Amino acid sequence: MSLVVLAAVVVSGCSVYDSRYAFDPGPVDVLASKPGAVDAEPVRTLVTILGVRRADDRSALPPGVDVRLRVDNTSPYPVTLDPAKLVLFSAGLERFADAIVRPAGPIDLAPGDSGMIDASFPYPEAATPGEMDLSGLNVRWTLVIDGESVTSSATFGRLPRGYYDRHPHRIGVGYQRY
Figure 1 (cartoon, rainbow, N blue to C red):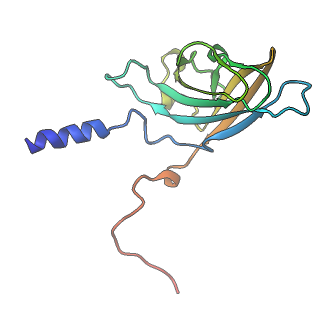
Figure 2: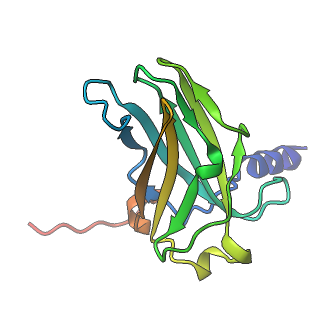
Figure 3: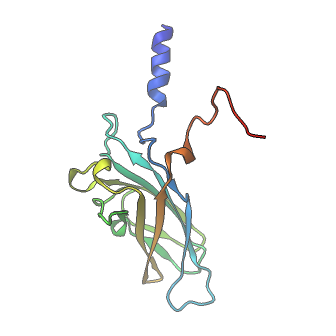
């Protein structure tokens, strides 16, 4: 019985993300203003890379990169985020396939509103992480602010493995020079 419980804990604790890939900074805060509006507060977008998704039989999503965007409409204008205009590029400038977005469809935000989307970008043409340059990622999106399209982007660099070692505490013999 205890073996079954242990197996359930181990399986449920497994992440769909490949721990060899972590990106910085996270999140990125990007400001966007309506063209010509000098006195108005800008729209704030927070963007982060959730992870590099492995192939997983339990998920309906294909392998790729997961991104989250949060848009805070701090401007006095209506804002629309159209996920169809969301694009992801690798450091090798390869474009990922179109995103699978949750929730689907454009998000309309009145002044003071916030909205968030999760976007899963499948690898282009059945590529794998090893075949792509994932040393960096660039996310590009377009907001429509009071009828004017404003395109923004955020760039992320892959952290070296030592920066995000998930097990920083070790047992062993240390040496220090005096």
